[in-house]
Image 1 (tube, rainbow, N blue to C red):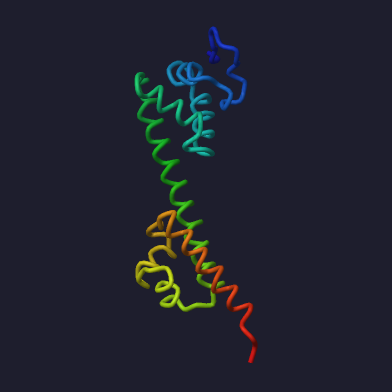
Image 2 (spheres, rainbow, N blue to C red):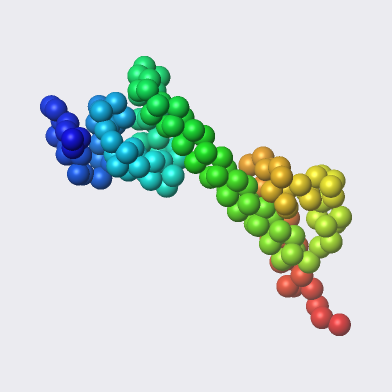
Length: 154
């Protein structure tokens, strides 16, 4: 049987992103695999977005059998993947900043006030630097690049 919404100004055929929380709840409680897949696709694209938050909200008071555990795992998995990708993006920026600066890793680490081993954890994505340290990394890289560009050649 096809999913139907009662007393809502949206249709199950509308994009999931347009559904209010009541529609998300209905899909979780009375929907089919097709409906759950649609929710999962949106959560995978935006693990902290509106739909993900709506699913969390529904799970705070409704525990549809089988679907509740599935959606909790989907949220956790999507967020873990997103965080891993974000850490790798930050690590890539740090590696580019070091390379562009023309400084050795030891010099760069010294200029930002950390150790070479800690800098390595940032550059590999094992640890994410604070926002303040990221600003410092970008500033040191820009200053070193500027000095390199204005330095008279041999």
